[in-house]
Length: 158
Image (cartoon, rainbow, N blue to C red; front, side):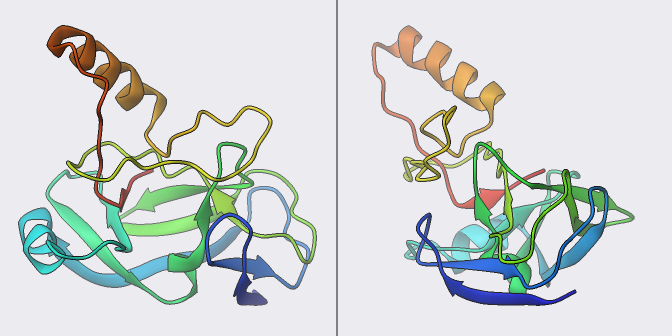
């Protein structure tokens, strides 16, 4: 597909396309070892950065490797994830020009310590990599507790 890894203004490294990608195209599979969330929590309990992708079954994650793990979050994404038959694909949601960084909305939903601050710089950036639903849930929970602290692991979800 013509993907390269190079420095990114969003996060240290990003995944860029060297060729035009048409809207709707399947770009790359998010690959890695399939492990339970419990195994992931134990494996990365002392890690700041992970490349975990939460699967729709709620039990397993993909411990990412390969170029797809370098696709950064953006609140104004040009890609989305598509979980089909237990595999996760990155798919274009608009035409993407050669040289553009590939970006999808991580829609984070769980965790405990990471503030998940968003650095995408989009005009409508929500300031967090949490999903809109998770932000609402956390805000409601924080109001109930009188606290505004929230956190998340770096698990990605579609």
